[in-house]
Length: 169
Image (cartoon, rainbow, N blue to C red; front, side, top):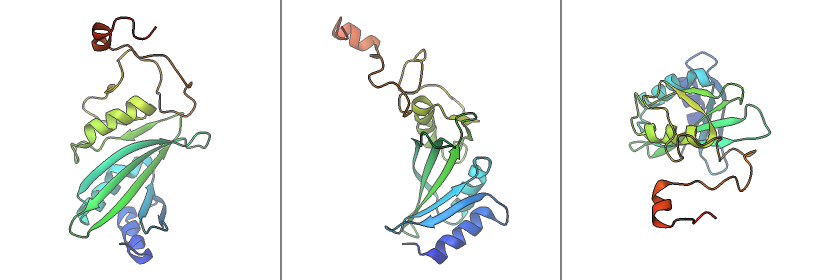
């Protein structure tokens, strides 16, 4: 488990003398968390990878509405050799919800980035196939946003209609 000194060392590695790191902290459960600027996420993750955090265990989105920057993209990295995890966070505003894709280094991020795009509307620049993954291509809106209307509209999938005609009425 990381201590504050280890986290400071990681933050120094991630930042490497620039202002990439916004904040670094150890939570009460001793989980390390480093927040970086959106334009520094790929380089920061690569620096952590060189320190043994080679496995991207998850990538997910968060809506901090009504705060700005509103959207968060959270990367959970794991080091088997260190037996440690580190969380890297990026915050982007509603006015410019763009983050660089990490699929070049972690191919497993492909579907996870598409899901964050589909549910929250965060665009991953450089993603090889940036399109919806769970909802129909013509669906309007992003249902995991906190200001999305509750109840919304039923999503009609072709398979459901063929099995149970009129199920949505």
